[in-house]
Length: 578
Image (cartoon, rainbow, N blue to C red; front, side):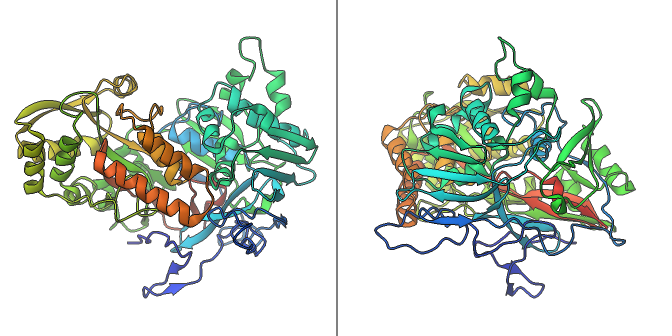
């Protein structure tokens, strides 16, 4: 069994005897140097605007364009080998700015490159974890912040091209960002978090220079720039395929690519598979550790497991966790499981009685069997909740309150609220075996309080429609805040009117507090603001965080290079096979 521990905040990795050893750059990944954003120079306090060690707001910092010490080769014979994998969904859309399946996100992350990417550190022998505050060069080779941290100037590498050989310039960068802000995709909701509300805030100063202006300095900006939705698209391709009804070429980008990333699509059948091959125009060939990746679409998890055991696929995701536990003991297979910031939660419609009373919500939170969820529902592949800002995310506060079961306290809170026995429904996605099992434990726990729960599995489409309509009294759902930013996390889940706040909860004072967290780069201020916001959310309890599921894959022996960034999507270019 090989189950590496989560990457510690210190950036060190665990050795076999449990001691700490310096972390290493992933094989084939861009190696770290002192010029990286992770290691900014120290400024006098009055001038320093510190952004989670990712921003240096004065002076030009060159980002070295380098790969790891080896040649990018993999396999015992020194050749790069192809891999076949199967994930928990199929690929439906190739546009990185459109809402799409998880497998599509893995795919689009391989078809676009960002201006910067995260720095990675090793976690065990098979996995690389993106650091919370470290960034390496990608399409941009250097950057410069203005003294007040509100203007970011990025210099592109010379000679960049898309897969068709056309130049990749600052014009493409600006057009990509403008498309994200004004186009049909979902990522327009992210821009206001860093103060971007107008396309005029993106400017191409020349073919290689891009300038981004924000009203405040924020550590969320580099995190966003490292996410795949901000990967660079071809302006020329977009313009050539635009129509009056589709000015941003959404239809074309859904099904086509002109890659700026490490791979191109060589074949794609939406019903069976997609095959990606290395992009010969990609600027960093040495970082591509395989000769291509095929993603097979296998809807039946049991069949996925059989294909893995027979050697027909090299890596599988989305297997039933009881089966994953059994595969721990199968020769030739390794279970890879890392801590995750993904959050499973019990949501309340706070506009429906009795869930409009925070004391009732607190009572339900006290009744839930958190440890049982982890042991009996997730078979150990999860961590009990530590709050809306998980313990692995910066600024997590233990002071907000504990999530432990205490039925006596729960009964006392219901009595305090003056609420007697009542009935309600608990809805969740029919497709989720985990939520199906968890619902039974929730039903049993709340029965101890005199609350009768009707367990209501819904077809996924209906569940989505009804959560969007904010009409479910109580429901199970999950959320992953890309970028691992605490204020993004809190705004998305409980911010007034946020598209992913399905609770109807609204608190103007909390909104202002969260916004102030976006608008400071001072670490101490962010810690204090975040802790206060977490305490407010705990006291109000519009939702109950119940567990953080692990980031889990099963691989055949000889497969390594699994890479988890702040989006927690697999980075295919680093996968390697002996």
